[in-house]
Image (cartoon, rainbow over all chains, first blue to last red; front, top):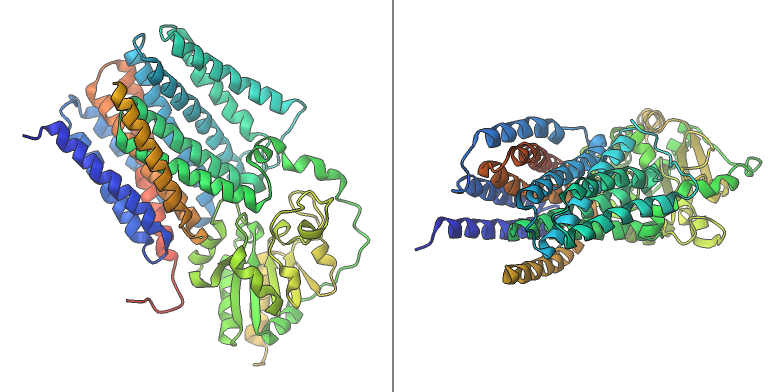
Length: 462
Length: 98
């Protein structure tokens, strides 16, 4: 006969398979929604099966917690698309909180006879969980602009941060050997909580895509460690998948910025460039009005729009869609060139443009679009800066030298919608703006695009 | 106990490899929904919290476990909801192949 426990194990096995399928179906937009359904089914089976476990003697608190969690979860599932980065960071914090609290309980329940290996993974679980919790809360604060977005740095910061982390790891190692010193445990929760805050303080807004991915990876790894402690294969698999996903995304983001992990975490990009900005005021730029811009766009055959974080800030994506419609109606071929680090998290621009009903087959990744620029009549840049900077290609002294960029300067005409000539987040001047083929369109992204659209509608057919 | 550990390590390693292979194939187009989906799946940790609270072993474990269930449940509910909302928005300009 199969006992209850075996049935539960089989349910977990099925849920594990569904989770893997869920991610597999994410590979293409046509199957991705099946992925969500598979994930939901797996979750439902696993949670439902667990609730029937005989080890559960009291349902009161479980029920209250499930209801409360749902009440908090629903509004978090309904946030505006522009708020998705901070929502994601917040959900990393919640995931890490869950893992840390369960790990803490496990420690005090099993205290003094914890085998060394279990104590080691428990330590890992709690350290990763706590630092991800506060780190993600900090990231949420920066993305929501409750906290200042610019990096805050001070002398010896890296030494302090690494020292703090080393103390926590050292204490955890000591607990592995002496699990009966329970009074040390609060420190391996508390010190990483502090480290999480310190870790995010020096990180600026434009580094957020890497940091969110990294926190995603940590959240996954801490959950996998929890799976080791509880001996739950399902949790190990889910945590490993999440950890791998976050890791791949972080590597992608780092590559797209031509920087290493450690450089993102310990580099504090903004600080060294102050000297480079400023000395460039005297150069000439050509500017144009919405009317001129509309005429050039209407006469083009092929237009590539390059969106950046500025488009998200100005909430211009719906106006951009109107521009897309107006140009497409005139027979202009319009595509979007999207840099991996455009925005505040991986894929941020795609979601905003998809929300504005722009078909996803027009949204092209940097590698897919770069070959198109030489045949492009107009490259229209909306709220992007560093990712279009040709200095990354040929100026060895530039702080972003080597970073892969969108080759907008190879298009016949470049148009840049920008508030003013002030340099981008890193304070790096962009030589693109001084090219003869470049037209600067000064103004707010949303209202300028709107003005172009009005001209396109108002003006006679070309 | 020892065997369990070794098995767990195998599971972790294999899941890691599967994760790399599967996620490498995810289009950059969908990286934001990917992250919210893995986050929702990760919240399977709720299972551990449920068993902890249900066993009712100590007051501390019940209190911490209850908060843990709240946190994880909100990730499950919110994570799946927003992933599906995002994916619904991705439409092709070409007619769908049957």
